[in-house]
Image (cartoon, rainbow, N blue to C red):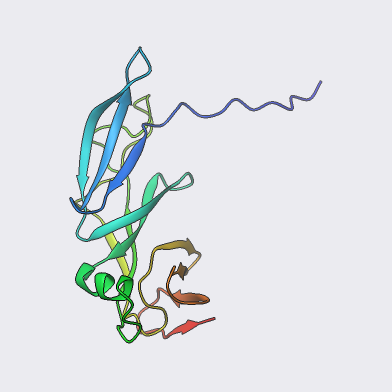
Length: 158
């Protein structure tokens, strides 16, 4: 008979963004069910809203290279243009993001920045990579920005 149940992959290590420390903090789960510090991954920027990309083993984070501009926007200055985008932490082979050693963890050394100048959409807080593009969102501006990641391709707000 056909099998309709597919067991889930081995559990991944929990992780969180430390915005002000510019870190991804990874944890192990102890036999008692508690979180225990495992590894920190440095980021080149303030990051937020992490997502694990199952297909590549990467962690994708929204990137804020100029946090002082974010503070101005939060305080109500809607004239500020704040660049931002995504930082992608691809897997490496030093330790595992998964509880088994089969899946390599993200690497800070090879982090890839996909940043836009803020003119298409300012103060990015979330986004996804979609083919050769990234789709970005902001809590302070309407719409989304679709940015083609190929060289010198223009960005456009939708």
